[in-house]
Each structure stands twice: as structure tokens, then as C-alpha cells.
Picture 1 (tube, protein in one colour):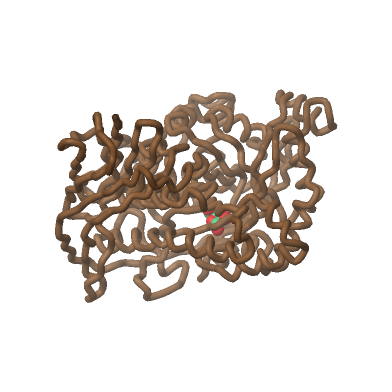
Picture 2: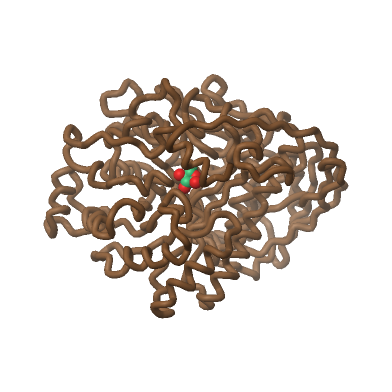
Length: 550
Ligand code: AHR
């Protein structure tokens, strides 16, 4: 089965999966250095690459974010208080909503106006829900709509990124949604409706996704067909003072370079300047195939989130590491039609995707339980974004709560921060910094992959400068060996340094509702020899080093 078919089936009926991997042997030699080139800035790290994605899918919105004003679960006007408090710690810049595939079935008008008058609708993901799943997961009560989403964003200090329905609503409704969100108080009937709901000031939504995965659940278009729709939806969309519109086009899945090229070629058929009206092209990439080349079947190729061996660990990281070449590859194709690079890449869905079975709340569709492996994966991905600040404008981890690579898991009055959530807390320090070229001279690690000795890099990361503060993050993928590295900073004097480490002796380490602090970041000592910091990166770890320069 392919992802496109999975989603079709999930929308219509649930599926079952099975897969098991073989053990691996591994070795690694030592001797390592990290060189941060302070005079080689790569660009400013957009805070938005530390963004999130919350789809109306199973337990993400109803239970994850929204518990209701009358709930016994502590809440702020219906929004889960624990979630808000934890999110404030990670400085979330942006949240994408309401999908995902859900977006192209969603009528935004259902989610505004008096609560008691809002209709119930069949959720796009209805068919994948299990028999006992809550009604709100099957039939959208529309209790959490645009107003509540914007309120959530305000509570956590993020800006909203709305994904519009291009498959099943006319372009007129795209205009109206923008009008509802952005027209000044008193200017339009929709602005009056917003005011009546308690939101006099415009929401000033800048970022608008124009459909989602339009090659699949968002309409099954060809790249050329979608380009025509994209132009129709975006040409003369209304804009208002205070909210320039930044449109994100539905971009490629994975390494589908034909989509990127085909879409852009068709867009510019109307004139080269059309490109300038596209803020970004959405790239979706999930690491899911742990079969080591044995299958491309969406069901059979997946691994288990918590029952995995060392070989699965490396395979997942190898899959995730493809993000680097995808960014470079799509960027190169984009350059064919946009040599001045007006457009950015918007990686608004990324993360590992495992087979069902690990969910903390039984029945939550495509929920999985993140482990230390997913923390290392996430650190690696965020470092990759950091290294390409000129290319990546937005990144949204899929998805925020009760879903794939979730930062948080929640059910009723229970809540925990996952290892992925801890990585976002550690990496928040990079936001807005100047990314610096950083060379990792580190011996590769080796492991046995089905009888063949295979190598993988031994340490990788990124660095950013914030005035006199230098932040270096890195992941050590080696499950067995620590790696000591000298950090050279040519031309700089180091005053002080501190380290934060996320690791465990168990590569399966994870937090649950019962054991909420099984894995947490800890501070670690850091040696500074003259102007050379030296740090020992523990096996299977995510590390942040903060250095104060003279
Ligand atoms: O994140 C889950 C789903 O994966 C999204 O709805 C869709 O865009 C993607 O295929």
C-alpha cells in the first residue's frame, strides 16, 4: 500500500500492519573535532522552522488541545492548561491548522458563530477511528474553530498558519476566510461576526496554505492542474492592512522533483513574476520505511515505535537524514524557475511514522509513543534546518500532541512531555540566531546491515550566534560509544560554557502518563582548555552547548 492509499483507507476504514527487523553489530573509532566558523554566517535561522502542526485528527484537537470550558481538566477557556504552560517554555513561533488532509474537507464557516448553532460534520478521518473512539473524533462538533485556534495561538505566543480547502470549497470561500480573519473591525459583515464572537481586532493571519498534499488527499491533481488552481485561488485574494499574505503552495511529497518542477513550470506559464507571489513550497517528508530496501509497501515497510532493535534505530536515522538531500534537491529544482530564490521551502510535515500499536490512549488514530530515538531524529532534523537558513522558511513537526512525532501526549486529565518536546525546548535557543558554518570532523560509525558493513556519520549538528552567545547543538547517533570532541572557534575567546544533555542508558527510553520524567534533559559539566571547549557526547544523545564569548 502507498501513503496515498493509506489515507484513502483511513478516511474510509482502518488498516493493520506487521514488521520485524534483525539485530545489528556496530563499532566506532574515536578522535573528533567541531570547528565553528564565526566569520562564515549562513543566514538568520527563522524562528518559524521551530513550528508545529495540529490537525483535526483523532485526539489531536479534541482531548489534546481542546478539553472544553466545563471540563474538570484545568483549562483556559476550554484549552488544556498544561499544554499552554509547556508550550510557552519552547517559544512556539507558528502553528499550522486544521490539516493535513482534514483541511481539504473543512468548511471554515462551520467553526465560527454561536457554539450551539455550529453543525456536526463527518470528520475526514472518520473511517480510521476505532469502534470505541469518542464521538468528537468521528463527527466534528466544530467546537474548536478559527476563533478558538487563534485564541490558542495567542495563549502560547505563536502565529496562526491556516491551511485552506482547495479540493472541496470554491476560491470564493478562501477569500471569505481571509476576510473573516483579517478585515478591520467594523469594515465587513464578517468582521462584525468576528467582533460578536469577542474578537474585535483582526487576527492578521499572514500564512495561508493553499490546499494540502494536492497530489493526493487534497484533490488528486497533477502538478499542472494544481498550478492552475493555485493561481485561481491566490490571484486577487483580499489583503488588509497589517497582514501581508504569504501563500504556501502544496509542494512535493518526499523526492517527487517532478511535482516541484511541473508545478513551477505551469505557474510561470502566466508570467515569471507569478513566482513572486508564492512565499513557499510545502515539502512533506515522513521517515517510515525501515525495511532496508525490502519493500516500498506503506504498511509492511513500517517499524514499531517502541519495540525496536539497534538496526531499526540506525535505519530510522538514516531515513530521516534524507531531509538534507531533499532540501538541497528541491532547492536546486526551484532555482531552475526561480533563480533569485524568492520562494522558500516550507517543511510543514515532518517526523517518523510507525505502525499502530504504541499509542498511550488506545484508539487514538496514528498516535505513537516517542522514544529517545525520536528525540535524536528530531534534533538531527532541526539541525538540518538550521544549516539551511536561506532555504527553509517554516518547519512544522507532525504533529503537536497525540499523533506522530508529538511533543506532548494527553488524555483527559493526564499529560506528559515526550523526549521530542524536550528537544524543542533545548533547540529553542537557536531561534533568530545567525547560523554559522560548522564542520564536524568525526569518524563515521559502522554497523552491520544485513551482512554488509554500513557507515553513518558519527556526530552532526549546527551552531548559531546570538550576540556573544554561541549555541551548538548536535546528536550522537552511536548507541554504544561516547565521543569526545574538541570545539575550535578560530578567532574567538571563550568566557564560559554550559551543556544540556538528553540521553538514557536505554535507547527505548520514553515518558508516559505514569512515568512522566523517565527521560529529561540534564545539565552536564563542560571542560574549557584555554579557548577550546571539550565535550564528551554520550552515546545516543542530543546535546546543547551554550558558550559565552568574550
Ligand atoms: O500527518 C498526518 C497526515 O499525513 C496529514 O493529514 C497529511 O497531510 C499527511 O499525509
